[in-house]
Length: 482
Ligand code: ADP
Ligand code: ZN
Ligand code: MG
Image 1 (cartoon, rainbow, N blue to C red):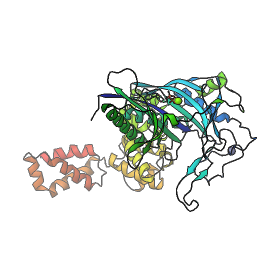
Image 2: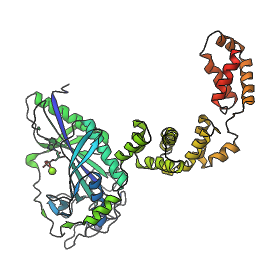
Image 3: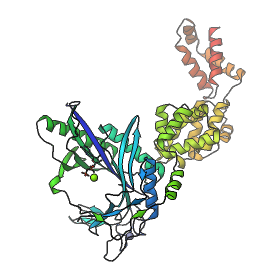
């Protein structure tokens, strides 16, 4: 296609719902999926005469996000009214921050690239419109105001992102950081995390950015990536044909896989921002910022770095484990119980990334919900390392523990799963297998080396997987060469 001829530039605006107990300016519960309009009060319904009261927790969550993204946290910031009319906005304005946001100038690192964070500001969410037919709704639209007043932070990036893939990586890392901080659940399907992408292209070599188009309405990593890819291609093609790109807002059409124009710059709202008269400027103390900084958890990038450099973990494994803070916490718990070392990390990682994550997927449960707890996984690894069980039996035991929650060592005893490591009983099995397969034995002696695996398999089968594989190998070599 036109790849290479035009250079893309991307900046993302991400809205993240803060998972506070209550809304930003009233005491209504902040919950998803409740009966429509039940989580409302005169404040979030925008009744005249009511006054907003700022949620302290939401401020703390916004500061935590700012600290994790290396932002300057402003001791003084200001809420502003953003005025517009829409049926999901009963007050006729949204309380947001405009020229004095709480956080500015941070960065997010992906691989060896830094993506600048322009600002993080606080604002309230609007309600939700339900369009189309339903049993309550014959052809019209309904409004649910449970979401009205839910606290949001908007995280605006610099136009530093250079590809659809990098945009997707940025979004994944950002989501992960917010989840590690426990300030946003990151559930994109439920709209807890929403992304608008600003995309422009310019002829290769040109310094000045092209005109940007904003794509809204994307609720998955895949859609963000696809929509950006589509826009880059569409804009490049338009430029190739000598057209000028109009600044506009477009919507991502999930079904057709295209973006469609929603409104041009001329139709854009004039929000008539002014400082919110019902709220004092937001003043935070240095002490609070210090306290929040001290309380920051180890973040995904730091964790990956520690795993790779202190525990010699493979990069891909570090990536997999750190992708979900619950998995990382599970791994860290194993290290705490077992003692943190490269060898222990390797043994745990092997079973965690294969068996435990498979079980978690199959059962649709997070790792911290499984019967196979860090304690039990460590017990199993210890049983392998002291030679009590083989790696194969370990997998069996993990499955059994996952079903019943039984203690691994008791299972080994009860089911007679202990590895057979005494030479004479293995020798007996080897002798029987060799005697039962004289033709193969001869063929092996005549040079068909590949048959060795067949004999190992037969002996393991005879022992029901319990024979010590090292001994089996040793004794087979001797017996077959006789
Ligand atoms: P607006 O005033 O239209 O909201 P901003 O300057 O605030 O524009 O930028 C909004 C978002 O668009 C930011 O994420 C920014 O990085 C991005 N952006 C700005 N200019 C461009 C451009 N030419 N191409 C791509 N993205 C851009
Ligand atoms: Zn309310
Ligand atoms: Mg802007």
